[in-house]
Length: 396
Image (cartoon, rainbow, N blue to C red; front, top):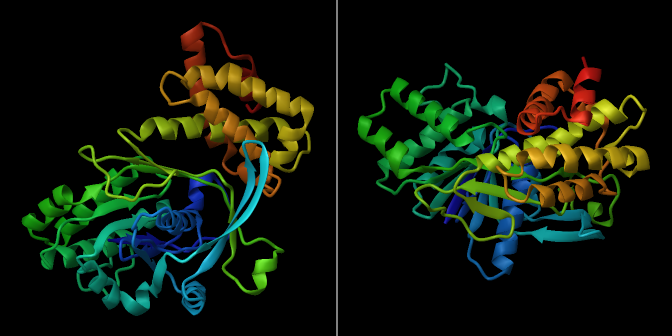
């Protein structure tokens, strides 16, 4: 089995959870394909494949394809495609700091230098899965892309060429896992690819094959990846060392009741991914945005400092468990348990998540993360939620 993953290169910062599984690369593997092993998703898929293999499964290998030029691929290949992931944080209240060696990647390619090899991988019977993590910008279509571009500039055009090569080889469809933090990521990507196929004059039989024989899975990735630590004993031997939190969730919507992927504790096949996205946005992201409103004016610099302060910590606990969780609990799974995990993640002693970074686009985040919960709370109870109302009024 192979997995193909497309990624765009991104800065080495952790940002918001699942976004930490991103980059712009094309990832192909003997069973797993992933692009760009330097971002959250990259860190999750090869690590999960490694752990699945150690548990006795046969997930195959990953081929990484990076869309943008850079030294990452060279470093990865020179290391024998092996690197370490540090799992650092709190798990059930206990401090965790473990290094895991990842050897699930077979090779790494640069799209602009090895596109022919990428298309050969597309024609491989071993390839089964395509994983992408290109950010929302990666969904932009470049009008200059053509069927004979080698490679095309945009990710949808790259994926279209991969699917065309596979179809022409007479092989079965692929499992497509677009892991960008975009609502309806799979549906949007499928629409872009099929629309571009029509524009290129692709045969109707191919378009039907791509739409029906390939399975396009909506999904949500949640893990904070903090990047390369400033100091660690492994840095001298492993320049690709990266750290992330112990928590990981890869919720994937099944298609026709099925999901072609290895088993792993972080991989959660679901009938509908929307409740998991709602849970994350309202609880985790909502708590982040609330802390910006409350703790940043009080001159706290990081999330951990704020939640460890007795007054703000108590305030956040009340907001979560008296206003946010009761409002969404009927629509999501284990809202209370997830909120407890969020508070533990916020207390991670290895993460310095700056409130100033979270404050970017703060007004927009108030409207998407907190205002809907306030309105639904009022509708459900006939009363205004005290803390949410206070936050929204204070922020104008």
